Length: 96
Image (cartoon, rainbow, N blue to C red; front, side, top):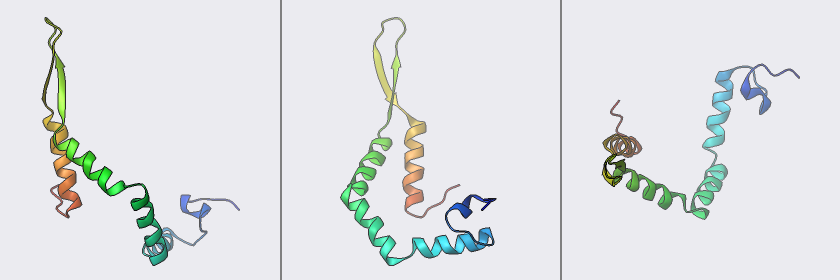
């Protein structure tokens, strides 16, 4: 069988639209959802994700003073903003 679309290796179907429907059904299957949730719980992924996001909101950028060699940390506003935007997006706010 010659595969012309990436989705065909998993489930041969007539179009991308039908592949999308099959994927939607699979992702909303109660057994698959329960298995996914058990993996999240087993690996403590929710707490780890929240901890990582909180660290992103407090991100600092180390800057080295060339004359003295001293390392000073300043707020990394770009990373903090990205973490804040991601947190808002998780809550359903799409700010662009």
